[in-house]
Length: 66
Image (cartoon, rainbow, N blue to C red; front, side):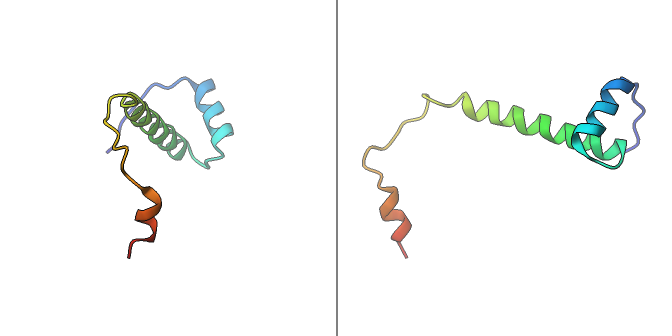
C-alpha cells in the first residue's frame, strides 16, 4: 500500500542509523513492528495480578509428560 507521509527528516535519519536498515521503508517498517510489539507487551503486563493461579499445577511434571 503506497502512503505519503511527511516525516521528520532528522528523526528518520536517526532511525536509519540506529536500526542499521538499508532503506527508509525498512527502517519505518521495523519501527512500526517494534511499536506494535511494545504495545502488545504492555497489554500482557496489565494482566499481572488479574489471573487466577492454580497452586497445584506442577510444571516440572508437565515437562516429563510424554
